Image (cartoon, rainbow, N blue to C red; front, top):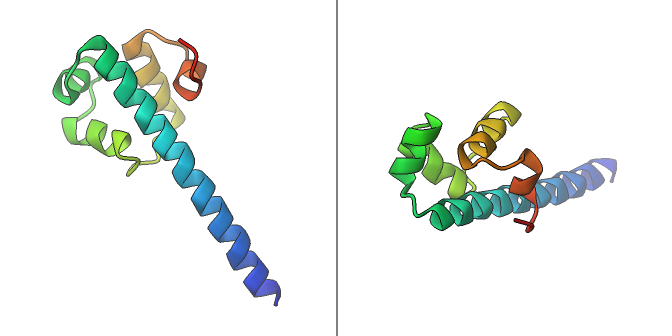
Length: 87
């Protein structure tokens, strides 16, 4: 019974994590589109590979805080702006 409870908690955490990745990827895509940049242009400006940018936008990568900071710097926004709807 306890093991079943752990699986439920694990599934809930996985769902929440996916939502965070989806929202972050959507924000990166939104900022990129506002700048009129392609994924390739964002990759050039940020130093990340083009496929990595695509994976972030599709919520396929759980990126590190260092990489989040690098993306924020590329867009010239604060890190917290990548997690909010404010401009």
